[in-house]
Length: 263
Image 1 (spheres, rainbow, N blue to C red):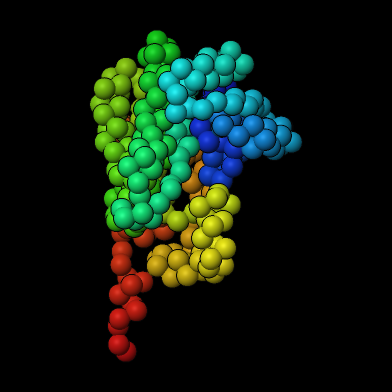
Image 2: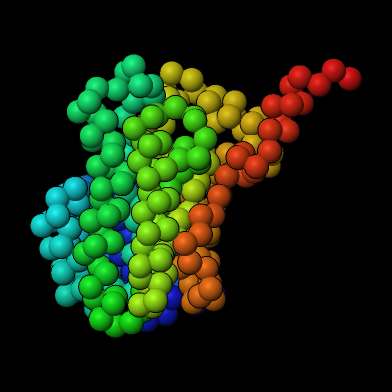
């Protein structure tokens, strides 16, 4: 399918993991992609992979925790490819696994990384979208925003992101802009958090798979496929929604129940 032909798309954190998968999927469907990342090497690699598959993309390097930098990034993207039709708010990271281990400064960092930057990116693209009368914003949340699964700062920010998604959908829906959220479960990527965990426990993804009703953890392409639907014109009546892409983790405790069932 080519649902994104002539669409200009910005993906934050597009240099790797879920972000890269989203970039590749939407480029394969015809979109022109701005890969926004703080890591130039990673962003350039995503652009290279898109080009190798015949797609169109540019890398924009910025620290998007800074409002001026975020505004400049949007201006650079639109100068290179044209007015943005779609924003995928994907960037974010987790630092600590418990309240006890989280310092006040680290708490602020996690709120910034997983909520503030989504607000800044949306605020930067919205004036142009409003002027044109159309646009789509997709926020990448997490099951952690709905169930206590550790990483309290990250989880609190993702919970707040759902509220921001609802606020944007209500305020800007009448102006032609849809805002939705995708909430992944465990996704097998090579980001630093998972590298650290795998170093301590190489079989971690196999262990976690037992708790997922579908019998596996997710892959970045699973999230990219969900984004490709919800950001497309065919999803025109979907606004203010949160789509759990978690293999049934938050819907059913059946795998846990089976651990206690005595035959």
